Image (cartoon, rainbow, N blue to C red; front, top):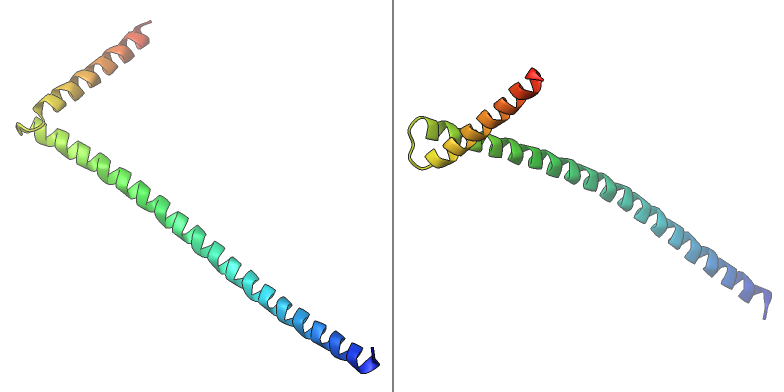
Length: 98
């Protein structure tokens, strides 16, 4: 093998290594960007779950209030809820009396 062939092989290897390092750097930046997007999406998802829970609680309160105001659709549910609350209060009073 001649010296010029060895120089060409080394140059070719250096070129390929340089290209690979550049691709690695690009992939590293892409990975960082994707991780940031993932964190943002997770935060948004968590905020959405909290919002859904808040609206669910508001909806349940509205159903209960509606049934207490005379709506026939949820009267049984309201009575059960009131009975549960009374039992909880009785239990608390009993614990305080001890």
